[in-house]
Length: 263
Image 1 (cartoon, rainbow, N blue to C red):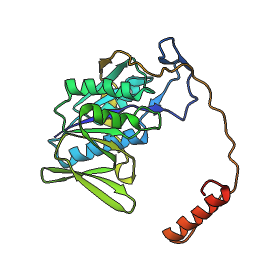
Image 2 (spheres, helix red, strand yellow; image 1 turned 180 degrees about the horizontal axis):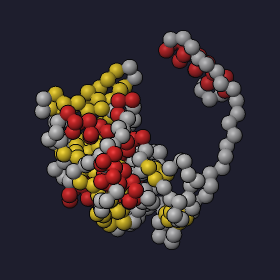
Image 3 (cartoon, rainbow, N blue to C red; image 1 turned 90 degrees about the vertical axis):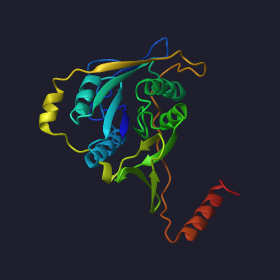
């Protein structure tokens, strides 16, 4: 089986956020030499799911696309240390991740051109660092693939691949019997391993190629400005609702009636 892993990276919270501005083409510019990114927990989980599947079945191929952005070279080297079969930076032209529909169309164009035969696409559930998770769903639509959201682990049963996600106190297992996109969430069972030091050192000497993904800007809302979000002070007391589900529901309804929210 061939697996494509899509990664994006997020701002590194250990460093002060670098200056961000908006140009005349609604393109976000990240300035300064301090711009840093690392893999998000969801990116790491998607990569680890692929690595575990390859551990269990060495015939599994792993190709990785990493969205271009600040600190791309270092991020590529950190991923290369896990020895994917191929690793490329994906250069969205223009890169407007806030426009999820456009970004999904750009990524889908590259996948259809270079990775259409990959049976499984793994992507962190919040690809793009915008905390809203729309790109994976729109990408599945553009690729004409079904999506399994909140995936946590994969498992081989002979030549059959199963993917699992948790729903409440239950586990749901899906057989991958057609091309699929799985958006991955993080958990204890998919925490990314540490790479071997010899692979880390080898990755420092590697060079990487970019795959451009140009597209005409789609009509629609346009990003006009970037502003600092106001700090909102939370007020009010918390109340712990105990008891079984029926009692909790009745207590919640009673509280909502008191607040005038539900009548």
